[in-house]
Image 1: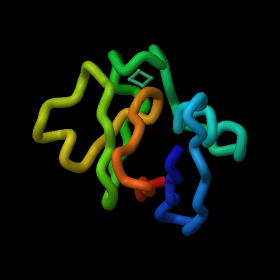
Image 2 (image 1 turned 30 degrees about the horizontal axis):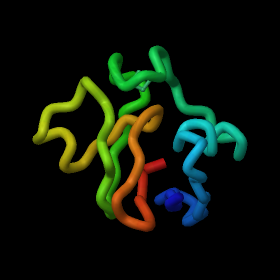
Image 3 (image 1 turned 120 degrees about the vertical axis):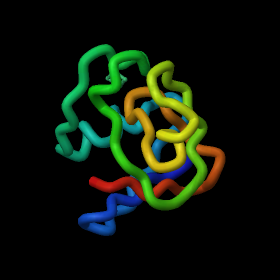
Length: 85
Ligand code: FES
């Protein structure tokens, strides 16, 4: 598991190994636009500013991956990820 830190509120939310970042955001009432939820469409792509994502999408270029991640499928190699929400 790892945690996401929400840049706007400073909230830290734990993402268990069997849940996506998106699942956890929804449980906390944070609504993110999505479509495919499989890392293909790019609808859920969000900026991050800290941490090392384990990118599992099929839509971002290596350059985009330096500051963006797909919330529906990405996980993390670092213990926390700071996302711009
Ligand atoms: Fe399509 Fe995340 S919802 S890439």
